[in-house]
Image 1 (cartoon, rainbow, N blue to C red):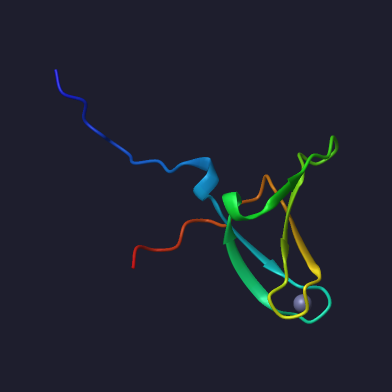
Image 2 (cartoon, helix red, strand yellow):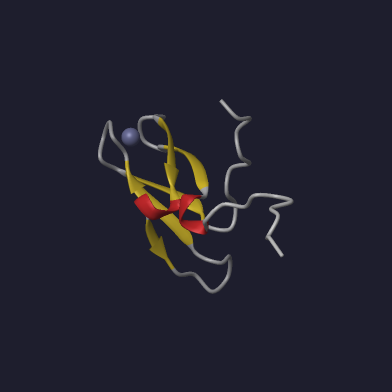
Length: 72
Ligand SMILES: [Zn+2]
């Protein structure tokens, strides 16, 4: 019997996140695998990427991925 995909998922490391730099207001979009994960007991941890503009840290909550964009 063949396996039929009824709904295609995506790997967690490819979850997309969106963040804004608090210092220079640069907006970024990144995959989970490109960020540094910091564990936090209270809110499930957060992800940090360096701001491409000012090198400050941009942090977003790890349990709130951006909804997938419409297929392009
Ligand atoms: Zn910045």
